[in-house]
Image 1 (cartoon, rainbow, N blue to C red):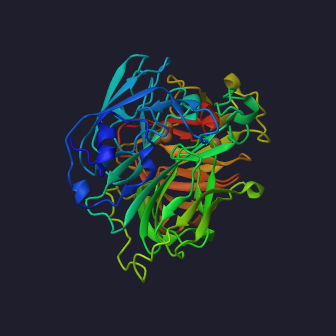
Image 2 (tube, rainbow, N blue to C red):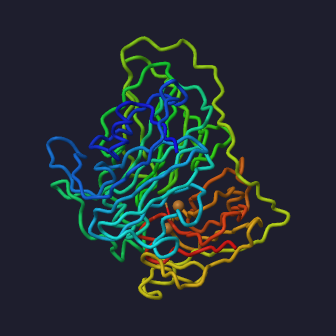
Image 3 (cartoon, rainbow, N blue to C red):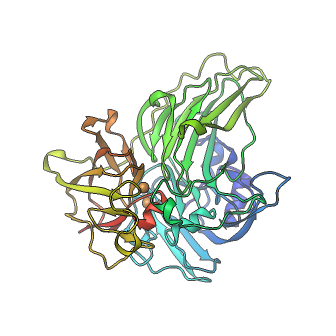
Length: 471
Ligand code: C2O
Ligand code: CU
Ligand code: CU
C-alpha cells in the first residue's frame, strides 16, 4: 500500500494518525515533486474525545469527539488505484464504525454496523482495507449513532489523487462543519429532538471551516487554486457565493464533470456533498472578498473571506491550462435495459404522517421506516440484479430538503421534475428539493447490502433510511 502525503508536516501527522493541527488548511498543488514521494504504510485512525479550540482564544476549547485528536480528522490522501489500509481504534465509550463516503468499495469495508460488519466496541479495532477505484474528493465519518458522533466532530476528508491532476498553483481543502454551541463554547446537549427531526434537522449556530471559525484565507493575485469543499455538517445545506470570483466546478461528489460555472453563481451543497472548484484569483493585491453562504435566505452570513496579499500578481493573465479532470472508471448506465423503481420520501412536519409514525419514526420511504442505527432484519427496499442498470425515481412528497445518499455506487442525476439535468452529473448524494422528483441511474455492479438514506442525520435516524440489496 502506498499513501502519498504532500507535506512533511502532513506526513508526520499522518503517521501519528493525526496530531492537534487542522492541517487541512493548505496543501500544495497535487502532482508536484513532493507528492511523488509516496511511502508505503498502514494508516492508524483513533476515534477519541478531544478538545478543540474552535471559536478563538477568548473562549474555552470545545470538548469534541475526534479522529486523530483533531476536528475535522486528518486529511487522508491516497493515489487512485493504490491500496488503503486503515486500522481504526475506538477510544470512545460507545460503539463506532468508519464509513468511507462515496468510495466504491467491497461491501464488507463499508462500515455499517450490523449490516456490513460488527460494531467496533470501546477499546476495539477494525482494519479497513480497500483500493479506491475513483480519484476525487471523498470523506469519512462514523455510521453508528451517526447524529451524535458526527455532530460531536467525527468526520474528515479522504482525497484520492489523480495520476495526472490539472495544473494549479495550490490546493485548498475546506471541511465545513456546523455546531450548536453554548455560551461557553461547548456542544449543546439535546441531540435527536423530535421536533427538529421532523423539520430541517439540528442546525447549529457556529459554522467552522477545518475546525475553526475561519480567519480570512490568504491568497495571491493571479494564482490558480483547486478548492475541495466538503459539507460535513449534519444538517446544514450551504450555498456558497464567491464575491468577485467565478469558480469553475470540475467535480461533484468526487466525480469529474464538464467544467462549468455553478448555477446562479452559487455552489449548492447539501450535507455529505462535495465539490471541486478551480478558482482563479482575479482580485487586486490587497483586496478582500467575502465568501457568503446564502442558503437560508434571510440568514446569509460571511463564511470566510479571501484576503489578497499585497504582492504583485503571480501572472498577468489567467493561467491558460486545461481544468478538466481525467474521467473515473465508472460503469455507464444503460437506460434502455434499466429496471425502474420508485422510492417515495414521506413524512416530516406538514407531511401528513405527523410525528407519530411506526416506532417513533418521523419519516418513511415507501411506507417503511428504518430508524436509529438501522433495523437490520427489516426487508430491503429493493433487490437489484447485479450488473443491471437501475433507474431510480426519488419522489419527495415532503415539505423538506433531503440529500439522498446511496452507498457503494455513484449514479447519474438524469432529471429533476422531468427536466433533464445538464451533463447528467455523477454523484453519490443528490439534494432533492421539497415536492421534487429526481431520477438517477446507476449500474448495480457492487454486490451486497447497501444503505440508502438521507444525509440530514436527524432524518436518517428517524426513518429516512433503507437498504438496497444487489445480488
Ligand atoms: Cu456518508 Cu451512509 O453515509
Ligand atoms: Cu456513504
Ligand atoms: Cu432528509
